[in-house]
Image 1 (cartoon, one colour):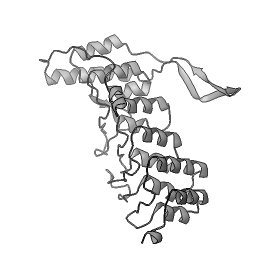
Image 2: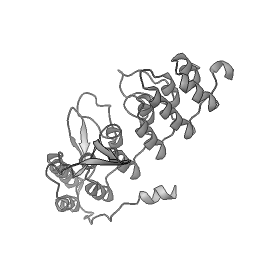
Image 3: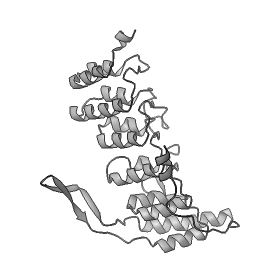
Length: 284
């Protein structure tokens, strides 16, 4: 939409960089920038603790968390950029993952730093690789910040153009994964930023995941067991509101209503029928 396009305009002008700087220098400065930020990765600004709140007369207030760690110096970051730093340089992180300057800025919740990096070429949809034996694996910054932690991270990334339909290593979209775990807030957020409710899970990057089954988010919700009924129903309502196909048939021929009946979800069965869902037998 036009509104979304306006949001994707960088919030500041890029810094001047000498175009004659060679690739080797760009990589060297990119590494130096990454190492500088990585040393300060534990920085967090003063913020609200969304896990600790008090509600009085209907008004909710959150506990304030103080600033912690050492704040990265934006003037130093600008100096690295002016010197030609590759802002998308990927350096070593933890547990075999790699990371990049923008991922570190978002993890810190230091959004002024993130704005600076984006204005100077940081790729919000950068495929971040691994350095261990799982070489085929990768992740996006959004997939790393889609569940748990501060919802502000996912909001920031989506507002700045992160792909809401990113497919993870297991072949599932972010929306399918959020639906499968009953993460209502995440499902609502992804859908509101354009996630396709009918995008199917695809081929996994690793052999130890199950082969792709081409299932939709709504089918997965109906098939999943062990979730609170309220979470299942709220996720299903959101998917239906955003035009999920209530009569999608998985490769085995079953529909969401078939799976809801098989897993004995009475409230979901009623919800699906109200939305026009049918069993596979009724669709023949």
